[in-house]
Length: 283
Image 1 (spheres, rainbow, N blue to C red):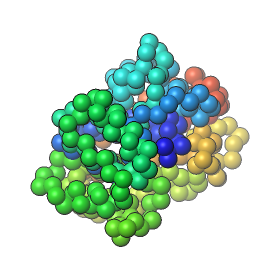
Image 2: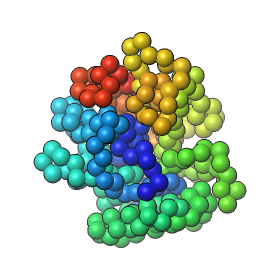
Image 3: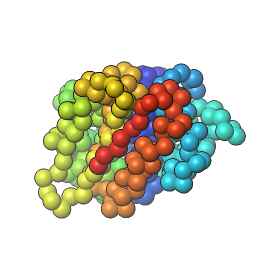
């Protein structure tokens, strides 16, 4: 398990949007460059209390969140009102798209790869390639082998600019996927308020006819220094994360905007970790 951020508010935001994109777009295939585990253990600490646990508590009281695809994913790992596990991106995808879709999950950690294989087998997924290889090169090759655009490419990198053995960075593969007509879902984090929209300069299409959207969630608090956050602590004021979608439908973009607004609005009333904090979603 290499992703220590699972279940934090940044991961909830990412998976909330990924699930909705998949539910609306219904692609034939999902290609994931940095998959992580499919299912994580429940950890009861302030970061998860502010993230997935808080979402699990509030979801039933908000119609938009209750009807989200991510809420259905949580329901699949919940007994009564208690989570039995914390879903990662691969489980989100498999629960939303089902057993007949095609999946390519890349993670260089053998334990994460084994976790994905076990979860895929338990759910009867028919076509799940789990590769312990460079995700950029693997997704590049998978894109080249496809003759249709019915694919979502999900990129959640540790380092956006690092070049792997393939000679490609995460941003390189993102541009390639978008140019090929795939639906791109790209996650990024930031810990300086003046960097919250850096991804737009990197990935926003120059062609006016290409649909794209970018939304971010930033932690704020009264009397807090917003100039610098801490990506190691997702709930710290000044810390944020965003998701860019390219080639998604107008219905998907509208739904993502609605979910961002719904996620941010009620949290100050239920937040057990930072009672004065709130999230702000922008698009």
